[in-house]
Each structure stands twice: as C-alpha cells, then as structure tokens.
Image (cartoon, rainbow, N blue to C red; front, side):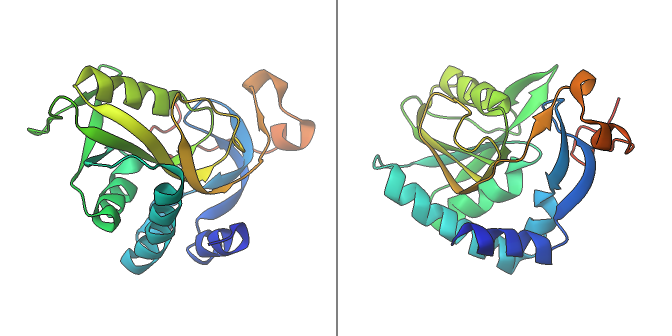
Length: 194
C-alpha cells in the first residue's frame, strides 16, 4: 500500500485533520492523524494492518510470538496486527505515568515481541513501551506503526516498520509560526489538553 492510498484511507475516514494540534509529545502541528477514526471501520483496519503485516514480515526476519502495544492508541492496531500475524496481542497501560502490564497479562521470559503503535512522532512512547516489555521478560524483535511522522528520524532502538513515513513539521509551543499561533490549539488524542 503506497503513501497515497494510506492517506486516502485516513481521509475517507475523516481521520486526516488540518488545523492547530498539540500532539501527545507536547509538540504542535498543523496536521493530525486520528487513527481511532481510521480504525473504527473493521474492514479498513484489516486492510491497513494486512499491508503493515506484510511490511513487518519483509523488514523483521525473526519470528514473532506476541504483539504488545501501548494503550490507548495502540490497542486496536495491536489487536489487528496480532490477528494478521497469527499471534496473541496484549497491551500496556500507564500507571502513575509508567507503562505496565495489567489485566492478568504477562510476557514469559524470552518471548519474541513485536511492539506496535498507531503513530510514531518522536519515538518516546515507543522507547518507553519497549523498556516495559524488556523489563517484563520479553525480547523485542522489532516495532511497527501505521504512520511514522518522523520520516525515519525517530530512534527507538529496534527496526521500525510502517505503512508510510510522513514529514509534517512540528514545533515547540514557544516557537510556533505566526499562521499556526493564530489558530486555537486542540488536542484530539487520548491525553487531552491540561
């Protein structure tokens, strides 16, 4: 699936937004990809994740035993990636700001894990999720995301497969271009504005 088709899937779902957005990283952007809207259609989620699973299998040659994703954004894509790859899928949750396993989930020592997210921008949550997986006993063989907003610049410590890489400028709050500063900021992600 090429970039044009991926973006059409997001656009058709009303998931490709333009405006002034605060990303979960705290950075500001004029474009936002609302993965929850793209994934709310099970058929669309299956199409996107089937293409992503193909990319994963081409990039990551080691066997995968388990998919682990960070909640909230990664839960649906993680589940569907597990289904596409034929392996179980579980998720991490934040407790007191740290990713941890709950709900009876565990990772047996040495389990080969694919960490899956919806969007990677700076790679911070990916690195935090990978650290939590390793602390629980998993061996992270790679990672995957639907959209790599860093255009391959985010360093997460393992190979990262994506459907597409986008280069969308992001800005610190005190370094906004005038046209972005003139628009009220919204945070459509799961963490909301404080």
